[in-house]
Length: 207
Image 1 (cartoon, helix red, strand yellow):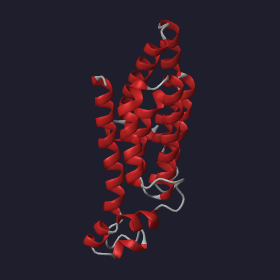
Image 2: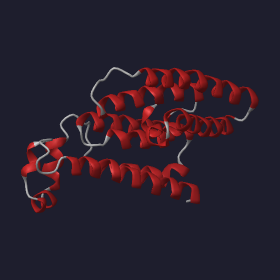
Image 3: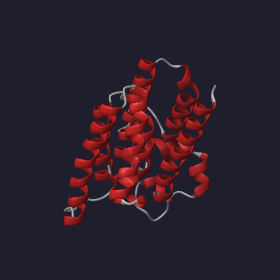
């Protein structure tokens, strides 16, 4: 296995751990997140499967621990997979991320970070990837925060990002012929664009 895949796997595992642990901490005693929150910590540790089952009633078949294991396995084997196999597996993991956020078993803010790592494998077309990524970020943001009317400043930021992101894609696709290099440059430039428009704290989960 090459160094790039090892680093990808390590980074994904760290973010996945934060995504799951953030939910477990927020559902501790007194939070009212679910009925298992009133159990002692030792009981939760000793009966993890029942705690997970009480939370995971809308996910397909995975508990948070299952998802972490699946993500780790994907990170370790992705270098040996064909492009089609990577696309299928990465899309499946993105779908599980969304379901986990909806079920309350994965922190939607960290789910956005994980999805950003998976999208280059799941969607090779840069234009489609940006559109699908933006749609998922919006869904996860809606889960993470109660609906509010966007402030005029936020509306202006969203409009600026929409215009500038389209220009980034147009510039890169017209000047770079290699599709792999296109993906790399577009992802990097959009990441920088989000930081400039939304700021460091909000860039990872705003789009």
